[in-house]
Length: 404
Image 1 (tube, rainbow, N blue to C red):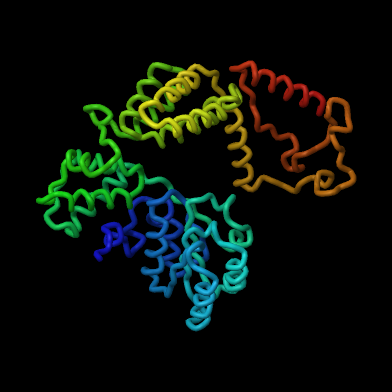
Image 2 (cartoon, rainbow, N blue to C red):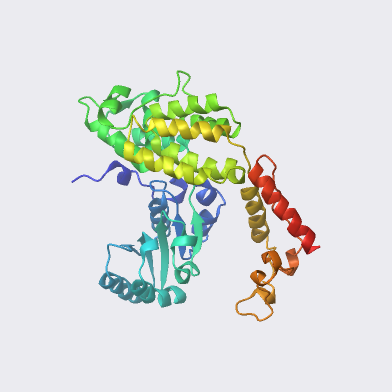
C-alpha cells in the first residue's frame, strides 16, 4: 500500500516546515535548539493538521537522534517498558508521544524518573490545552509550545509544494482549484493534501478543476464572491458586523458562511463573540449561543438556519462590552512580566486570621486579597452600555469606597 501524500511530503528539516514561524523561523526557539544540537522535553499543542508531528519528526531527524513513537491511549504499559529498556541500552532516547493528555498514572509513574534524569526526552503532542489537560507532574518537566492555526496562504503554499514535488505525475491544477482546496481544508494541511490526492486519482488525466473538487468532496465549494475575497475575510467581517451592531451585514455574512457549508466556524465564531464582544453587557448570551448550537446540531440543514438567524439578530442588536476579558488580559500581562508577589498570609489555606465575609453585614469585610506588590491594582474598568453592567459598576464602586 502506498504512503499518503501527506506522509511523503513531510519535511525532514525544521527550515522546510510550512507555518509555525514563531517556533521554527530563523532565530526562533526550536530552530536555535536544533542549531545548538540540544533539545529538551517539550509539549507541542494545537489543532489537528497544523504540524505537531511534523515538527517533532523534523527535530529528531535533523539532529540524528534515536527515537520511538508512542500513543498514550493505544500503547500499553508493556510498550512503555520496552521503550524504557531501549533508552537504558542506548543511554538516551527521544519519545514522541501522541495524545499525551490521555497518559494514565501507571505510564506516568514509569516515565517520570527517566524524564527527571534526562535518559528520556519527551516530545508530547496534543490538541488539548496542556495547562488544563496534562498532569502537572509531566507538565512541570516539559517546555510548552503552542502551534498557531495555519493561514490560507500557508495551505496554498503546501498545495503548490505538493504539485511541484512530482509525487503526483502530470498533475494539472489551476489557481481557483488550489484556493478551493485551501478553503475547504479549514487550516488543516493534512486534510488539504488528502483532498488533493483523492481528486488527482479520481481523474483520468490528472487535471483537477472546481468540478473535480465538487464531485469528490462532500463539503460545498463556494467562492464568497466573484472578487474571491478570502474565506477568512468573510469570517472576520461576520464578527465585526455583530460587534458593530450592524444586523443586516451580520445576516449577510452569516448567509455566505451558511452557503459555504461552514457551520463549524459559525458555531466557533458565535461562541467567541458571545464572550469577547457582548460579555457582561448581556451575560445570558453565552448560554443562549450554546442552546442555539445544540438546536442546530439536532436539526441539521436547512432548518439550522432558523435558530442561527434568530441568534445572530439578537447578538448584533445586543449591548456590547469587552471589559471582562480586557481586565483578564491586563492581569495576564502582569503575571507574564513577573509582577505577581506572594499570596497574603491571611488568605492562605486554613489561616486563622482570615475573615469570612458571610459572617459580616452584607457579606463583606475589608481585607486585602491582592499581593502587596499589586494591592492597589485595578484591572476591571466597567462599561455602562447595559443595565446589567451598570449594576455591576455600582457594586464595584461601593466596594472600592468601603475599602478606602
